[in-house]
Image (cartoon, protein in one colour):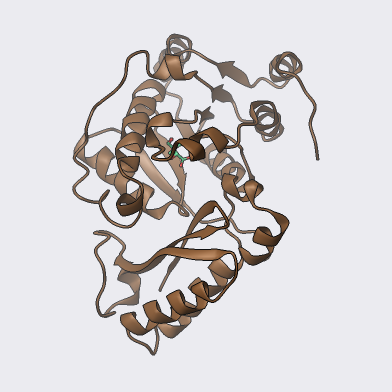
Length: 298
Ligand code: PAF
């Protein structure tokens, strides 16, 4: 369904449906300090916009488990290691706002880049090495950029609970570490991956796939299911070989990595002793679009 609402229409609608939109830190902080005094619990869903059913499931859960739900939309430039990816990242603020109103999100925080970074933030976080595995090898400084923005957002929004999708599994582990390390009083809630009917994990980047690429993309989930099945009988090396051979035999898909790692430390697992420790994570290029996914072996 297409929405042709202008930002003006939306401001009117958000007033009717009581979703407040804040564009500045000072205004949202004022709102939050008033509500914190009333001991209201805040569920927070940080996003980069281009909202899909996966994000909406996080909003639904945040709403169900808290007195109010705050969503943020901010395409964080410092977590992109690739300029082209940042430029091409989908931005549909009007459509996002319409979706948030439809699910009764209470507050949207949509700051500008200047608002979040009035001066460059060069903070370097020690993320316990968790940022160096998998994504970290291919996206230099990505998790430091995530840590900078997530910590800033937590300080502004002061949520009781924050909701993240398990598709970005490494991000979840890194954020849990950040929160522990800096004693940030927020509970991090991991939410199940939401998939299309054909198994493709929902991602804002899916919208950029061509028809042919979209048709092949569900293979990512299929190969993960096969890897899990093989984990019952085959060695880690055999599973890895199977995945890389089958992916590379497909047109349009190129494997960047496939790793079987310990869920807490993210270290490679050489031999599977306990399925509950193991998660398989994958990153591929489908055409020019980089997609990630994962599967628990339990
Ligand atoms: O997962 C995302 O959308 C982003 O990495 C996040 C957590 C909103 C930080 O920019």
